[in-house]
Amino acid sequence: MTFHSLIHEGKERLYKAGQGEQAAMLYMLELCQNAHIDLYSQMDEEIPEEIQTDYLEGIHLMEQGEPLSYVLGYECFYGYNFKVNEDVLIPRPETEELVALVLQLFDTHFGDQEQVQVFDVATGSGAIGITLNLEEPKMNVIASDISKKALVVAKENNDTLGAHVNFICGNMLDPFIERNLSCDILVCNPPYIPNEEKMEKSVINYEPHVALFGGEDGLKFYRDVFDKAHQVLKEHAFLAFEMGWNQGPALSALAREYFPDAKITIHKDMSQKDRMFTIER
Image (cartoon, rainbow, N blue to C red; front, side):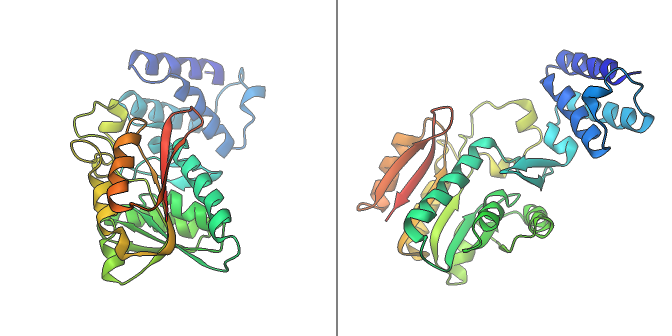
């Protein structure tokens, strides 16, 4: 069997299973890259048995609905490979834009400071906090999550990528308040999907629900953070959140209740959808 014929088989199987057939090619590219094989120059050559076995096992998992990132065991985020498994949410491109926004606001607000304290709340795989620390070493990042299993993954990513993030376990801002900690920047990609919203099977069956769903209207965790934020924010701190594309008006009104004098801004993503939300005090 050649690379070409095996990829064709993989595409057909994923298509029949109702999964994205493009994953068949992406998965083979990853396997070949790890084996130092130039796939495009060897498409009509016989495939090594080991790669054939691994490929068919992966296709079988994806037929059942398992996301490609979990099959591979990692996801590329902001140019870094983060380990992922079913204990953590798969980092999305939209969250990369949140990181870029925080870095931009950092330069505006704190570019002349030697050290800036950053809280990454509900860190999951650690993608946000670790990337911020790697991209801007002046950011002293503490990341929290309610899931001990997620923190195991995040700590491994921190060590593997050579970052210097500290991790604490607890619900949203509670572990920071308990330790009497304060920050200049609070960044969070909270669970913001309404409980009854329909999701793709590859998401609902595999990714952790605690990182997805935010109550009946999807705003529960924003309320929790806004309610306690004044206990951890320094005088000129800013907050940055990811949000659902249709949550801007409700979030703006909610934030105004807690931060009446702040600059509240909705930011669009590359698709021109409302995706990020900042509060500058």
